Length: 446
Image (cartoon, rainbow, N blue to C red; front, side):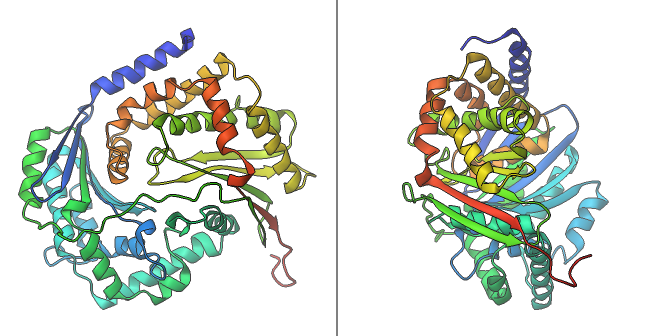
């Protein structure tokens, strides 16, 4: 591919970003992996501990354990009682939080870089010494259930997305919502979370990521000081990479809830980098996504939203870096006077056109530049750098992929994209959910 002149400045920025960061990895004797990325632009550092466990690891009937345990991790140890963790962080000028996904749970702290020993000591303490009290569990499980009510049960779009995910992920555990099903949350016990903690929160199932104004060898010495004595697990379960059955068949659901606007959800079962037959298959799907929905000049936006007004809005997603098979999704709101079926059919026409129409070098270069810009801006922040490192390590790909992304995307050709569309964007891989606003009953109108 020959680059247009306007693309060279972006490539130069990306090159400087890569050269400015030095990354080293170490593994402690107890199995804890440490990845340190230097970024000396400001005297700050982010510390993250990533555990390779999330909702996709949970057995049927026990969904939501990983997220509930995340809440309990702030409920104290003998050294740092309940409520003191975040108070200490704030006292020393830092911020902290955590998040749970299908495939990992992560905890982070951000301070001036001279507070790194404090961050490591706090994280090592709760990795080894968490105390769960019945009253704290009872309180937090109520908080989690209320969170589910507010974010999902009382939100029509979230309801639709949850049902769409369960329908589209035909056989893999990613069909389970990260927060868990309500009936499972109602039946969770403190013993469930204690066992989950002992099983997965061990050094040989964790990655410690430090990014910022630090010296890698000093970080290694400090990590050994605080984490080195924690014993690894000798019975860590072996997990397989989730795979969907090939072409599970076309599925469609119609959902009527009191939403404000109709919405169309379309998804195709596809591989990610962890399951693709070749890595290029996954990189091609990422470029294909941006051909369809990568800014104002992308095909769906330019043709169906601005030109023909078939849609009033469209968005898309493809998780290149998922643990296992994933979805290639399109979400749209039909234009005025159009049914969701008509909108769906017009989108399908664009997908079919992609299988035969020529993708020009200019179109592909524009898409490539957009994806590169997204990657550059993401890595401009130390927390985003750490997030990407931790995610890649937690799903088994390795942090090195982040530095080879540009060249792998650049190798994708128009023929690759056309063949990918023919292979994956087919009815046998497709799930559709049509969200239709339901009329409010008498007395519900506000």
